[in-house]
Image 1: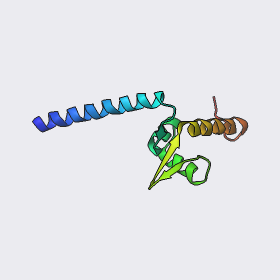
Image 2 (image 1 turned 180 degrees about the horizontal axis):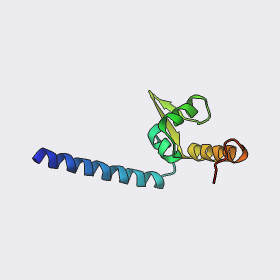
Image 3 (image 1 turned 90 degrees about the horizontal axis):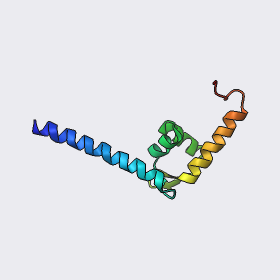
Amino acid sequence: MTEDLIRRELIAFRDELRGIRSMLAHQDPDRSYTVEEAAKFLETHPQTVRTHTKIGALPATRIGKRFIYTKADLINFRERRKKQIDSSPKLRQVK
């Protein structure tokens, strides 16, 4: 019983920390983003972010085995993609 309670409390604490971290991410424009955070920001899958990084469409800094993205680069990438989608009849979203 005690282990179950501790596990639930730790999960709740972890979720609360994630919420705080997410809230702080939106307040600091100079903050860097991991692949997972960049994917969340761009509303896509992390593998899609890795693919765009690999082909050079999304600028990133590599630190060891990890990629780091700036908020400005993510915003610029999102805007460029939006323009590409809006200008291409094949990629235009159905409304």
